[in-house]
Length: 174
Ligand code: SF4
Image (cartoon, rainbow, N blue to C red; front, top):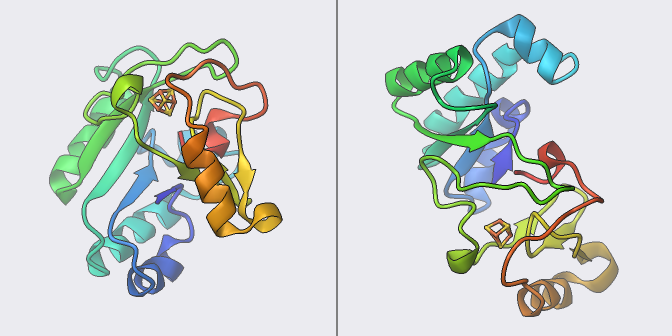
């Protein structure tokens, strides 16, 4: 599961009990003020509490998704990398991508972004199963039922990403 982590303090152990093994948590800075700006009012302490709860619930691995503008030498990225080292968390640097123009790149420290090997399907919070982040295809589990939506997403997975004008990167677990 990919999450902003804000509700993990409350749900980490319930998710573990429900069968979740691993979690990716988005964190682009350690600065409370900058985090507030990026997330339009978010409280970074809730993310830290969520990370602690995920550790306590034995979710593993816990990966931190850190969006970078140019590279991982940026100050915020270095701060987050140090935090991950201290906390024994894995980090993945994700380059800021543009869904609409199809400008995407390999995820630094992870497997994402390699279309020829990609076998991923994403389930978004509103119930869409998306076969590719850089494509507008989506099959909704509430409209079609879980099995049909899953099969459609699987059968229609594109060979490679193209563009996505209907979603934003932060809204689809990029
Ligand atoms: S197929 Fe889509 S989701 Fe998979 S790596 Fe390519 S662009 Fe990303």
